[in-house]
Length: 93
Image 1 (cartoon, rainbow, N blue to C red):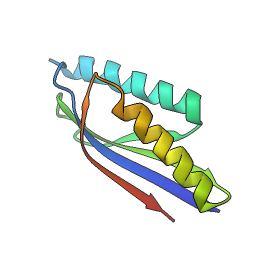
Image 2: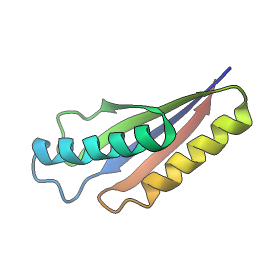
Image 3: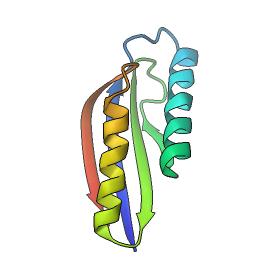
Image 4: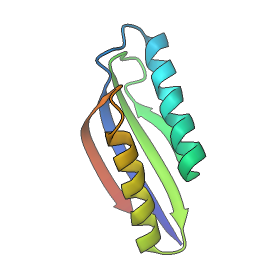
C-alpha cells in the first residue's frame, strides 16, 4: 500500500474575505474529491483570507498509480485560475 500526498500553498488574490476564501476552497475540494476520490484538507493559514495550504491524499496499491493520480491532481489544480500555486510538494509513503 502506498500513500501519495500532495501539499500546495496557494494565493487567492481575488478573495476579499474569509467567506470568499471558503467558497473557493469548497469548490476545489468538491472538484478533486469527485474526480479523483482523494481526501482533501486545508492544513494551514485558516485565518488568512488570501492564502491557504492544502493537502491532497490518495491510497494506491503501487507507487506508479499513486504518482499518476497525484500528477493529474496537480495539473487540474494548476489549470484553475481562481488561485496561484506558489509552492508544492509530493511525498509517497
